[in-house]
Length: 452
Ligand SMILES: Cc1ncc(COP(=O)(O)O)c(C=O)c1O
Image (cartoon, rainbow, N blue to C red):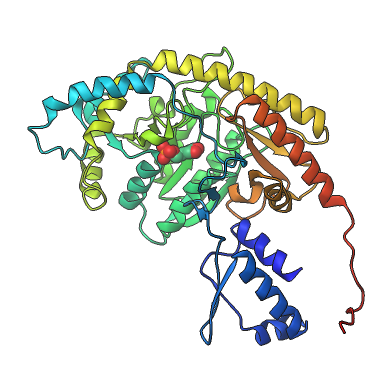
C-alpha cells in the first residue's frame, strides 16, 4: 500500500523527483504504522527503481532506469514501443518536411558568409510568417515578428520581459500544463479564470480581467488545450479594450489556429481588435507541421520585438539558420499540409469518439471543432488513479489535475486523437479495463497478519 501510494504520487507528478523521504522510523511514527511496514515499502521502492538510498544519508525519490521526466512532469519513455502514448498531443512529421529540408540545404550556402546570429529571426522566415498573418486578415510586417525555438520558448521570453517575481498572471483553468510550469518558473502569482463546459463566459472573463489587474493574461482562444473550445468573435472584440483598462497584456497562444476540423470560417485573431498594443500573439509550426522542428514566433509591436531580442541574447542568441530555412520552405506548403493534417485528425477524432461511446458510454465530451484533443468528463473523480492504472496496462494519459491551475479536475481527462485509429481503439479498450479495475474491491486485512 505505502509503496504503491508513493509510486502513484510520483507518476502523477505530485511528488517530485529527488525528494528526500523521511527516515523509516520518522515515517512510521507519523503514519502510525510499524517500522517493519515502512522498511518493506522502502525496499520494494528501491527494487522497482523508485527510490535510491545512500547508507547514512537517506533515501530519495527516483524513476526506474529507462524513464525520464519531461519538463511538464509527464513521463516520457526512452524507447518503449508497446506504450500507447496519449499524454502528448502532437503528430508525426508530414512528407513535405523532407522536401523542405532538401530545399533549405540548397538555400544554405547563401547564408554561410554571414555570422548566422539573428536574434529576431532570418528575414526570409519573418516575412513568410508575417505573410501568414496578413492572409488571415491581420496585416503584419516582418519587423513585428520574432522567431523562437517553439511556442514554449516564445512564452518564456515574454514572461522574462513582462513578469517580475510576484507579479500577477491570469490563466484559464484548465490550461496547457507547460504554460503553468512557465508561470511557476517566472515566480508570478497565478489567478485562475475557470472555463465552463460551453467555453468562456465573456462577461465573467472581462470582469475577472478588470478585477485581477494582472500584468499578463494567458489565453488559448483557438481550439483551447485541453477543452477544444473556440472563442467567439464578440468576446475577441471586447477583450483588448478590457485588458488595456486593467493594464494587462494579453498573451494569446494560437498554437492550434490552423487545425480547424469543420468547414467553418475562423474568427479573426484577437490581435485584430487591439488598439492599445496589448495583444502579444504567439504561434508556431509544432501543431500543424512538426514539433521536432522547434520553430515558433511572437507577433507584437516592432519596439517590443526589439526589446525581446535583447532578452533573447541572454538565453540562446538566435535560432539555428538551417532550421529556419526549413521552416520558411515548409510554410510554402502550408495549405497542402494543413488540409492533410485536418483530414487525418477529423478521421481519428471520430474513431476515438466512437470507441469511447462504445467502451465507456458514461463518459461525456463535447465534440471539438478543431485542435487535437477531447476533454472528457469521467463518471467519477478518478482521473489520477485511472492514469496510474492505465500506465500499468501500457497506456499513458495526462490526468485532469495536470491541466488545473489549482490541482483540481480529477473528474476530467484529456485524450488526444493524434495516434493512428487502431491504436486509439486499443487505448480506449485498455482504459475501459483500467476503469473497471478501479472499482474492483481490494482485500483489506483488518488485523496485521502474523508472520512466523
Ligand atoms: C497551447 C500550447 N502552447 C504551446 C505548446 C508548445 O508548443 P511548442 O512545441 O511549439 O513549444 C503546446 C504544445 O502542446 C500547446 O498545446
